[in-house]
Image 1 (cartoon, rainbow, N blue to C red):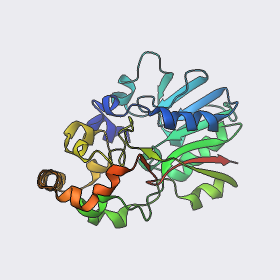
Image 2: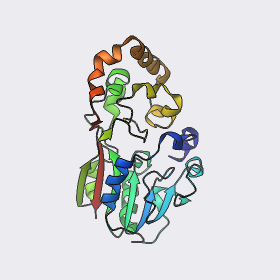
Image 3: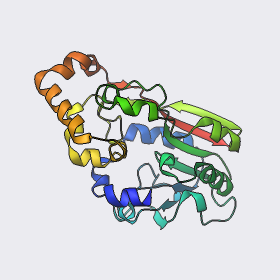
Image 4: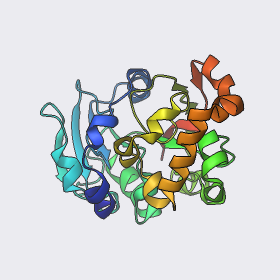
Length: 244
């Protein structure tokens, strides 16, 4: 993750601003936890300001974009958390597990340092029906896996609760599916730079040019105009509350 976001992470914080509706779900999931380690913390999205938070982030580019009020950040990785056992009330990881070099080890480390549940915001992408994938990047569909495979998680966390996280039409956090009702945002190269999917896809400029033409001539609206009537959509984002 370090190398990827040191390359694409410049300007990330301008497009990946925490959405207050998603933040409220996370606050509820945190319950009474007072001390939190946030793993793969990036620019600090969804870190609560009313609790004691320590952030772990491998990329210096991302750490540099954390706002002044953000929690103290330590450069490090999920696979080797520099804390004693049971150091925190809970451990969190928001839209990050797909970047870890060793998912099993990262999950074990989170379970080790947490006295309570571990909380993930993740994206279950198997079976995802999303026009950007289906129309413009169909060859990526077979590669789309759950970012946190539940069979791996259950080997470490016997108890798992899953909460759907609908994506509002005006979501302020510009993750992969955030612009489902604002397709023109995918034309913005800086918006795409804040989404790791595009760093792994091929012929991105060619596909985006096709989207631009489809928007100009009305093809996109003829195919997908029904989504413009929706205020939120379930696009596979989930809060996962895992207890060891």
